[in-house]
Image (cartoon, rainbow, N blue to C red; front, side, top):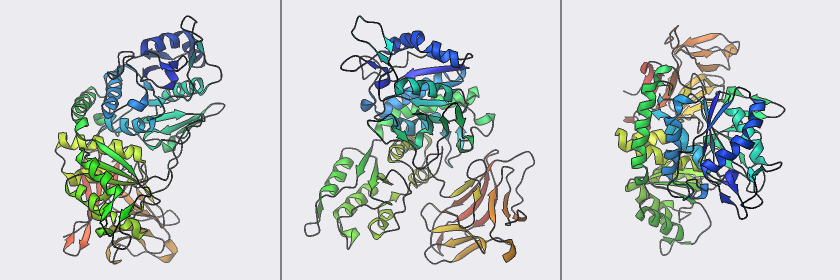
Length: 529
């Protein structure tokens, strides 16, 4: 088992008093002497290589405190993985904790490729584990003294756990910290002074290290659907390397800014607001995207409680949207899902173009928007396509709002629903009536299963199966209806609710079964005329 270690910097590879970063070469030499024998004792088949040629030009040590990381540095890390992909079975990235959740959010969008539908065209097939520590791994009393392992530190424990995780084959970018393996684009830093520094409040852990490493593989991403989209395929890898190089060229042209909701002065009399001035300044400075860290379920001050559209903050955001700035309405609360329609204080945000990220973290939203904006320039996606992808679950970064996927979230349980991205239409699995496509504002029925359902069969379960068949099962597990789009050879598929409903004359809603194994539409169950 061959694992590559990429040392970007951070506390884990600092020594001295005050702490200062080691060079990648110094850290590698110390690790080969002090750490590798311990790891080899636990994992005799382990071959560890330290990739010391991956450098960060901002720093004289060529490693970098994560406080000073910028988007182009995400590309350096991703390039280090892709350039060495064929030689190793897994990768371990050592990283400072300050911006680890941004990097955990960014790397999945750089190591995976997507088409305009959000379907994977280059898919990660090996573990990429990010870890760091609150305390350094090594200790040196003075410059002439030999290095020693720091006693009883999270650095040593995290190195051991991350290395064990890199051997599992989990095909995604992860963060390992304090005995837990987390999905990288779900992780957030939750504690600045304890070893238990990271968590994924909106998603379960992928593994936990107790006496042994327990794997919760039911929560893992499934990896490539077949070889034609796997990074193990040399042609796919080469295309993704080219794609990454183009992103790196463009990424600084698409800066994204974050803005917390906070109590600040506004005046209805003068039509001014301090927060509006901040927004205008960000846009004038060149921001191409804004990630709002709203209150609660997505509520943001407008500058006028009684008439939001007259508020200075509303007008500043509306002006930004008109100028092409993409806005994502996240929440500053660490757990939960955005639902800005729940309160009048948030219901106005879609009017200024604010996108709903479901339960995506603000850090991942910033990284995702930055990278997708760069990709849209490369691939020729229009703004509507970019905004659709921003609200779509691409690599497990958010709850799937508008689809069922046969390999991940395949079931629509009784009482659950999927929604169009603008929230105008919902497909609800009604406990008594089964799946029903409804206009939210009027409760108008657009579509239902074309079979008679008996009360004795209900409630039922709608399943997007991995053979490509969409099936509705009774409560006794009898198939009551099927789309008849199955393929005995397998047809991994998504069931999409696409489009928007504004009126009977402005209706673009469709229900589509898309076979992403073959990149073909299997069926439309409903399509507006």
